[in-house]
Image (tube, rainbow, N blue to C red; front, side, top):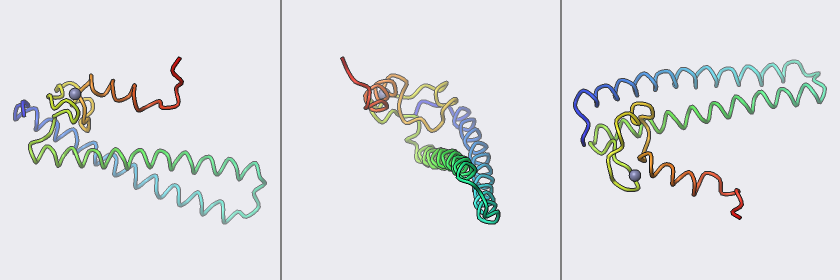
Length: 130
Ligand SMILES: [Zn+2]
């Protein structure tokens, strides 16, 4: 691993504080989603418009929640890689992922080039090619 001890410590710190923030968001989001469903059930006289809005709010919360949970899992995996010494290596080309990229995106598993290739081949499968 080409990262210096100091860079590793810095990334570890970034990931730890990000994990704590995410855990807080997930806890808050989960209890908010519970409160909203409880309110919806308790009021019992929603017309269809209100119900649709309430559903949208819950869906939106769930989408955020899922994103947070996924990011937290990715960060935990990244922390495990850091501990195991395999951190910062691109899973596609095995080259080192640059430190600036890791700082911005500690859970990154690909270098910038491979990520770009990956996104252009996987992210928009529905895009028609002329
Ligand atoms: Zn790569």
